[in-house]
Image 1 (cartoon, rainbow, N blue to C red):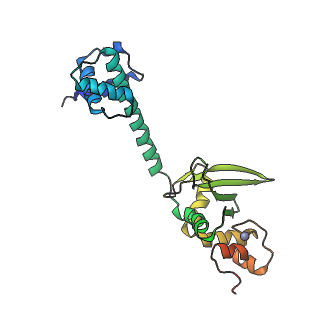
Image 2: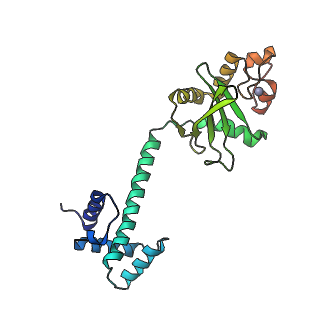
Image 3: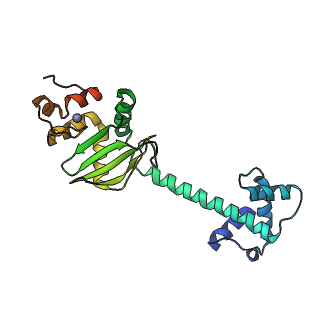
Length: 230
Ligand SMILES: [Zn+2]
C-alpha cells in the first residue's frame, strides 16, 4: 500500500530533522498537505496557522514561504505528540503509591495540621515527607527528602497527588516508600519503635507508651491512632 500524502510528508519532515525551508518543498505533496492541515486548523489559537487556514478556505494557494510555515506548525505538533507519548510510557513504568499520599493529605484535610510531616527513620536512610505548598512546582505533591544529618538534607523527588505516581529516581528511597505503601500506619509505627523517634514529628520518644507505639500522644491524636492502651 502506498503512503498517503500526509504519511509521505511526515516521513520527509522526520528525515529532515530540522525546520523546513521553502527550498525543501520540491514535491506537490508538500503543498497539498500544507493546505489540508491549514484548512483543518482555522480555529487554531496560533494566529498564523488560523490565518493560513482561512486563506486556503477562500481558495487562495499557499506561497512556498507560507506553506513551509504551515508545515513547520505540523512539525511542532508531531514533536509535541512524540514527547507526550514518551512521557506516558515513562509514567506507565513508574510505581504508584496512593496510600503514601493519602496519609498526609488525610491528616491535613481533616485534622487541621497545617504542615504535616512524616519521618521514616529506616535503618538504610532517614526520609522526610511533606506536602508541597500552593506555590510549589507541583502543588499538593509529596516531597521526598533525604535527611543527611547536621541540618543537611537532599530533595530526592516527588510523589504526584492524583494517583501517587512516584517521580523519585533514588532506588533505595523508592523501595522504602513501596514498603510503606502496603500499610503506612503500621510501617511507620515500626520505624518509630526501631529508631526511638516519633515517626511523624521526629521527636525522641521518652515515654514507655510512646516507645511501644512508635509515636507520641500528640501525633496519635492528629492521626487518629491508638496510644497508651496496653
Ligand atoms: Zn510526634
